[in-house]
Structure formats: structure tokens, C-alpha cells
Length: 512
Image: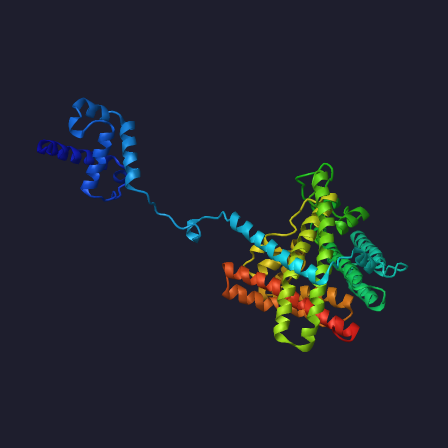
């Protein structure tokens, strides 16, 4: 018994030394895991007993064979390493240092909770008010005076201003009128685009608020388009004058080669772009910035077009139904707390209105910026489909306003912000001026159709300037993103309630 123990002791130590020299801890230059000699001896003894041989009974030939088989020796080493260690240096999945980013399950959970919570609210609304959706009522808003249709007539009359801008540019291109005369004509034309529809909506009693908003929105878009049209053509005339001695007239304003569809849509150069076809293509295109050669897609994808058309029709009906069923009763029930200045109930009604208002706004965004504008772009083979960016990841207010409406952002950047900077104005004043213009058009599109002036939309937009400064200075990352979302969810219902309250007071004499 003692002889056998003497034999096993040295052999165990020798085997242990061989393993420590060949394992990964020794090769990596790191300290191997520590364990007691008794544990190591038991592990080795157990391994030897499984193979049916004791360490003391192993012959020299078998030891030599083991040393000459590196694969077998490596497998033995790996087996021991797996037994000795089960931990590695790593972070928890919810820690930012872990680098883990697959939160699809949590996102699905949020969607399910959102659907369930809104389903409860919607069911409560139906139980309390019944079915209020009435498509005929919406149609009646447009057909209130079927013998005049003032809003539709206003939109048709807009062709006069389109042709006035085109013919003014033609006269400028051939030099029959001076640059100053052309500038005055453009100023008069652009001013009339804003004044004429506003005066019509205010003076004609048969114009409904919905029809007024649609007609004024059409004229606002047309104002921005024609401003860009005259600006771009003026730049082309300046290039032609600067290079008149070196370039022929047909290349006075160089065109950009088109990557797709260039054979179907050959590029044009100034003044060859001054045609009715080119003008009306730009007027109908889903952009506010004019170019001589727009990027064009090679063909119309019929399946894509039909999907967008189905989305347009479906979400339009959904928006109308949600407004009738959810928004209108909530707004009507909010009038009395605002009249009595009951602060606690005002806050409760505001928060109650925030959910349907925000949901409708999100649906409107998808319906207009994705479905409708992609449908128009596909139909016209317009290649630039960047109508929005990832505004939902906005960590600052300025990032949101620059990325949620790309066509307006491009227009402001190209035709206002950069020209103002080139005149020496600092960035903060230039940004404030951009918000000032945006505030004007927001108030223009709300106050005139409602035929009242309260400046709630104007003040709401101008309030974005100090909010942007505060968020950019004191909040960042997820905190900044949360601040942007809160401003969107709470800010819009406040403006809606203010206008609706004032509208009821003015047109109905009292609130109910």
C-alpha cells in the first residue's frame, strides 16, 4: 500500500507538470487557474481509471506513444481546461458596454402593449359614444356648395400664376425684358400666390375650413416651387453670362449626366428647359427644389405603384375614421374645462387627447411622406425618393426639423439658409429666420381657413428655438430623444385645443 502511494505521488506530479506546460494558460502567458493538489490528483486518477490503467502501470512505450500523438494530447488538455474553467470576461446584455443590439423581442413587446392599450381606449370610446364614423359627412364638407366649389376653383386658377412664371423666364432668357423688370414681375407673381387665395377664403363664405386648408396648402407649395424655379433659372443666366465667351448657348448651363434612364430622358440645358412640359413636370413632382435634369427611374414598377395606392386609400379612410370617432368627442368634452379654467381637468383632457392626436399624426406622416409621395414619384419616374430620414432617432430638436420633412428642409437650405450665411449672417440668426418663415406658413395654413387670428401655431413654432437651444445644451443621447418625443406628443394637442376652443367661442358663442 505504501509502495503504491510512493509510485503514484511522483507520477501524479509529473503528469501535472506536463499539462501545465501545454495548456492555453501557459501559452497565452497568463496565470492558470489555481486548485489544490488533492483536487488535481483526484482528477488525474479519475481520468486514468476511466482508461483502465493506473499511472504507475503505464509503460515507457505507451508514454512515448502519448507524447508522439499531439492530437490526443491536445484533446486531453482541452478536456482538462473545460473542467477547470467555466467563466470568461463579459458584460451583461443590457449593459451598453456589451455591444448587444438585438432588442427585437422588446420592440415586439412594446408594439403589443401599445396595441392593447389603444384597443382598450378605442373600445371604451365605442361603448361611450357609439359608432361615429360617417364618410358621407366628409364628402359633404367638399360639396357644401356644389354649384360653385370655391376650393376647387381656386386650385384651377393657380395655373395662371404657373404660366406667368414660365413666360417671365422666357422673356428673361431671350433678353426682351431686363433683369430688374423680371425680378419685379416675379415678386408680384409670388406675392399674389399668397394674397389671392387668402383673400378669397376670407371673403367667400361657402369655403369650408377643410377646403380652405387644401387650397391654401396647394398655393403654399406652389409658392415654394416657383420661388425655386426663378432662383435656379437666374443662376443659369448668371453662369451663361460668365461663360459666354467660352461656351456656346446650348451649353450655357451644364447639365448633369443621369445614371438611370438617360436614354429615355435625355438631359437638357438652359434655356431649353423653359417649356410647358418641363414646368408642369416640376409642379407635379414630389419636390420643392427645381433642377434642369431630375434623377429619373428607368421604368414604372406596377406592383410598387399598386401597393402605394392601396396604402393611400386605406390610411386615408383610417385617418378620417379616427378623427371622427376619437378626436372629435375628446375635443368637444375638453371645451367645458377650458371655459371654467379647471386646471386639473384641463391637464387630464390634454393627456387624453395626446394619444389619439399623436397616433393620427404618425399615420398621416406615413400616408403622406411614404405612400402618397412614393406613389407620385413612381408614377412620374422621379428618382429621388428621400422624402424623410430617421427623425425618430432625433437627439435634438434641430435634427428632427431637418429630417422629418426633407423636401422643405432642402428648400430652406438651398434657397434661404445658405444665401443668408453667404451674406455674413451668423448661424443662430439664420436658423431663427428659418423657424420664423416656418412659423408664418404654419399660421397662414391654420388661421385663414378658420377665419380667426390667434397666433398659437406661430408661437408654437417660435417656441422651438429656445427648446432647441435647451435640448442641445443640457440634454443628449436618449434624454434628448425623449425630450423631442415629449414635445411632439404634448405640443400638438395644446395647439389643437387652443384653436378649437377659440373657434367654438367665436362661431358658436359658447362652449358646450
